[in-house]
Image 1 (cartoon, each protein chain N blue to C red):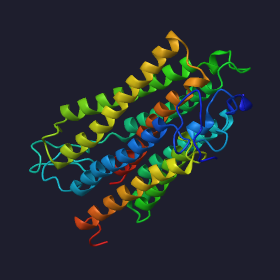
Image 2 (cartoon, each protein chain N blue to C red; image 1 turned 120 degrees about the horizontal axis):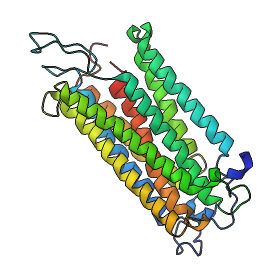
Image 3 (tube, rainbow over the protein chains, first blue to last red; image 1 turned 180 degrees about the vertical axis):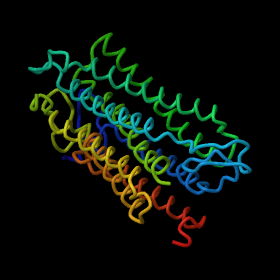
Image 4 (cartoon, chains in turn red, purple; image 1 turned 180 degrees about the horizontal axis):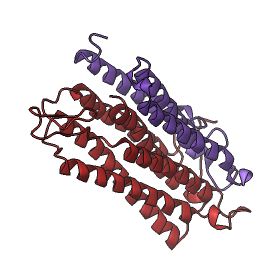
Amino acid sequence: MTTAAVASHAHPPTSTGLDHRKIAIWAFIGSECMLFASLISTYLIYKGRSVNGPFPHEACNPPLCATPLKPILNIPVTSISTFVLLMSSLAMVLALAAVENKGKPGYEGIFGSSKLWLMMTAILGTTFLGFQAYEFTSFVHEGLTIRTNLFGSSFFTLTGFHGAHVTAGVLWLLTLFAIDVKRGLGPKDALLVDISALYWHFVDVVWIAIFTLVYLIK
Amino acid sequence: MADQFRHTNPDIDVHAMGEMHEHPTWKEYKWVALILTLITVAEVWVYYTPLQNSPVFVPLLLIMSAVKFAIVVLFYMHLKYDHRIFKALFTGPLIIAMATLVSLLFLFGKFAGR
């Protein structure tokens, strides 16, 4: 890999030879690492310090709670939503591969279509958000809101921030899908899809950490 | 379909994208997805077994989570094949973030008495 400036039809020469947009997305992802580390730290510091229920992994009985409350986290439902998000990452890499290899033999079929995989990724992301909306709604019905206790405050802040990132990712994917439908995405647009893919996979790795630290570790 | 996803299109400016090698094939992506799924299943299985009361429960879950994290970053985010500047831009802040997290947990006594 040369470090000299690379003249290209796709971007102006840069001192590193690398496209500034890709450097920018990696720098952004680096800053996002620190944002989510602070939110996860807050959750872990407050973990087990709530004085009133509901609690994540423990039942809450009178007099601590007015009525008996079971542990609030629903591991089976969250496991399915985790699987959905993992599969969305697979769909995203296939979308990028389809864009990079558009026009090559074997990419004429439906499974070589970037439109299919971009839409599939957006649908899986929306499904994940649906699971999160279901979870939040059921928590509120069971008496846990952002104001109930330390667990509620830190949990809704952390998972809410992650959900907002997934929402932004879905909107980004739908924008790429619209461009693909309108004029078609090809190898010259690979960087645009690559940047969105990096963001999407980052959202996935953050959830990998949240799933273990928030849901599985008691 | 294995060779269809090789990253060999001459129209792509691989220098600008910072790619040092070809991307994984469709077959490799499929294996990565399968491994991630199996690790997730193992994590949930461990949660429901008597292992949850064992001292190895938390380290085991953290190791499995770290492996999943690394697999996604290396293969799906292509960091394994990317330019060292991208690796530095990600691992630098990640190390700072992890150090901050562990430091804060120490400061607030989360490891006390263990």
